[in-house]
Length: 148
Image (cartoon, rainbow, N blue to C red; front, side):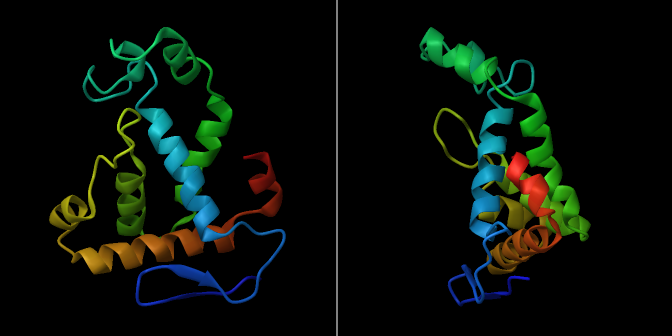
């Protein structure tokens, strides 16, 4: 099993690399991909101005590739990774942070905004986020990871 430790900059570093298990960074990138895709799907975004499929400034080919050309099963499996985290507050932090505006690439919920609705400090939120990624890394089945 790969062991991870946290440095003072809130980055996770691997102690023993593993060829089979994904890194927390790879899991984060996959979750951010899914989070940006969620808001580009039709009838999902909180406001029509956020939906790529209805944005007048987006060219037609981009609308089709983002709104209709996604793999729904892959998206569902990726978002389900968060359920591997046992702590409900950590799941809430991860789910909040993974939602990304597909037009700007910015997170919908900043660290400060998540801090406000959870009542925790920003550094505590970042630490919980990283610990959640490590928990997913330790819990995920390598065969399932290959399907993502």
